Structure formats: structure tokens, C-alpha cells
Length: 313
Image (cartoon, rainbow, N blue to C red; front, side):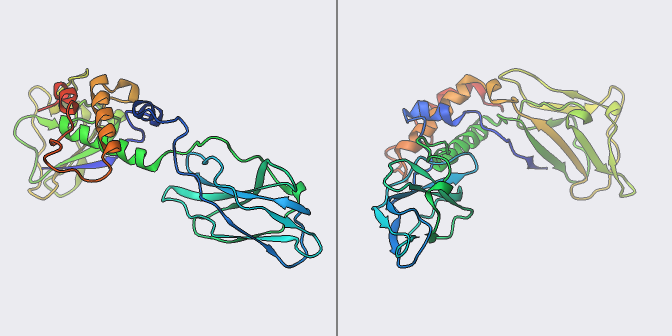
């Protein structure tokens, strides 16, 4: 028997806002904003409006944009002789960064307006030859990105909670396979609570019949038990009363049961499981390096107490 994940959850039991609130972090905490740019005048005529200008950058991820980064030194352009500006040492963002945006003040101004969007996370230079009238929107003042470390800790905490409780928290699809045929007795489906009870809701049972043909077991020939509630045990499948399991070839992966499980949306995940996740995330936040066995147990104090009532055996 083997169990494999087919479709992982698309959300987490906690939002980043909830995690930030637990950690007492600012709601704007996210991908760190870029450091300062290196700015130099180009000895050539150009279109940058004559006057003093300063520059900054932002990082862009799939979920948002950082606040304005560090401000550069000022440069004063002269259209006829120094009308372009070379920008270098443009910071490279983390793995979540997909684009970067450059912002500039108008001549003598103090508001940073969009100059150019770099549609990658690799280029480190750009030459500005844009007049003030072509500048775009103002640089953001708040960070709308997700902190990549918080995201990873949240995912790790959810995974640890699922391993500890033997449950699926958010809706996900699993595949359970058996070698040499159907088991004796019910087919117990790990990772409760079970959501799917019909083909339409995601429960599909296939097997290789004695001729070696992959066949779907008809819903009318089996019954499904799907306990509900916060402490629900594993679901199960068995033949209808008076029925038997189909005959199969004695081969590897002779039977496959694909099913959907989990509490559903984040709002349905028990509060005790979420509380334990917050404690674990708090521990990961405070201890960003490995800790010695003397200073901690297998789980930080309080986490197991939150999760034990939901443990499925």
C-alpha cells in the first residue's frame, strides 16, 4: 500500500495577516524593499528634464509590491550636455521577486514617479532618457508583498500539523494504491476528514481486472463512510451488502483509490489546530537557526497540547 499527494492545498489554514498579528508584526511587513541605487550622469544630450533628480526602486512579487526602497544621491541633468542618467547596482530580489520598478522625481521635486519596469530579476543596469512628462504613478508607501520567510514557516507549520494529527487541513487530493488486489475488509482512507463520497465529488476507484484492463469500480457496487466534524476519523469504502470486491491481476498498483479530503476552507479548520500552528510559527520566527536538544523538545511547548485532541489514529 502506498499513499501519494495528487493535488496539494491551494490556500493555508491561516492568512499572513493572522500570522503577522500573532507575531506582532506590521501589516506591511513583506519582501524587504531594495537598497540604494548607484546613479551617474551620462555625458550626452538627452531627454531627462533639466534639474535635480533622485531615484529609488521597488520589488514586485506575484502578490504585490514593496514600499519605496532607499533613495539615491541626487544628480542634476542638463539637456544639451548631461541629459541622460545611468542607473547601476540595481538590487536583485529574493526568489519570489519577478519584476522591479524604478521611480524618479521630477526636476526639483520630492514625489517619486514610475520611470521604468524591469520585467526580470536579473538586470542590474538601466539608462534613463525619459522626460518628466512621461513619468507614471507614484511609488507605493506600503508593502503589499508576502514575506517569503513567513510563507515558508506557514507552510511548514501546516505540514507539521498534518503529520502530527494524521489529518488533511485544507482541501487536497490523495491517491491510495494497493498491490496484488483489494485488501481484506474495508479500504480505510488516511488523512481525514474525507470529503468525496461519489465520482462527482472526486472519489474514483480503479483496478486492473483479470484481463489486465484498467477498470473503474461502479459507485453502485460499494458504500462509503465519511465521518464528519472536527474529530472525524478516517473514511472507508467497502462493497455493498452482499457484494464482493472485484477480481484483479496480482500486479503492482492493482487498485487505486483517488479521493478528496480536508476540512475544506480555512474557516473550517479547528481553532485548536490553528492555535498550535501559531505557536510553532512563533518559535520558527524567534529561532531562525537550529537549536540544541537542551533548549527545546520535539515541538515547542504548547503545540502538542493544541494538536493532541485532533490526532487521528
